[in-house]
Amino acid sequence: MDDLHLRIARVTEDLRNIQQELNCAAMQAPSDPELMEALNSLSETEPIETLRVALDQMRHFLWFYSRVMRNEPEFGDNMRQAGNKESANGDTPRSETSFFDQLSRVDEVMLLHHLADAKRRKPN
Image (cartoon, rainbow, N blue to C red; front, top):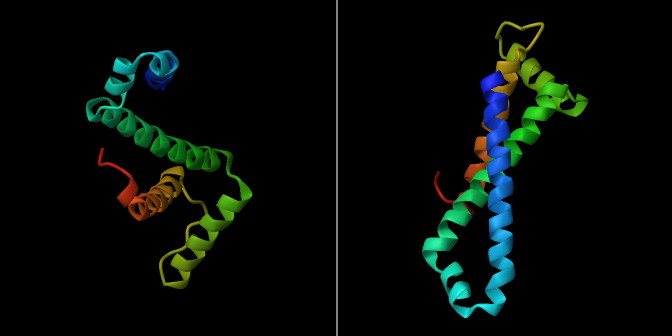
C-alpha cells in the first residue's frame, strides 16, 4: 500500500505541474499568435483530450470507490438488492458481500456508463 501512496503523491504532483504549465501557456497564448496556433494544432489538442478523458474516468472510478469504502447507505442498498436477486434466482445467499464483489459490480456500472458515452471518448 505504501507504493500506491507514493505513486498517488507523484501523480498528484505531476498533475499540479501540468496544470501550472497549461495555465501559463493559456495566459501567454492570446498575446502570441504563433503560440495560439501551435496550441490549437491536433498534435497539441489530442494529448490534452486524452488526459482529460483519463482524468474523467479516474474521477468517476474514485467516486464509486469512495462510496464502496465508506459503505454509504444508498450504495449499500443497491448492493443488497443485487444480492437478493441472486438468492431469488436460486443462487446461494451470502451473508456478507466482499469488497471485491462490490468493486466488481461498480466496475460493471462504470463499463456501462462509458460504453454509453463511447462516441465522446477516445480509446485508452
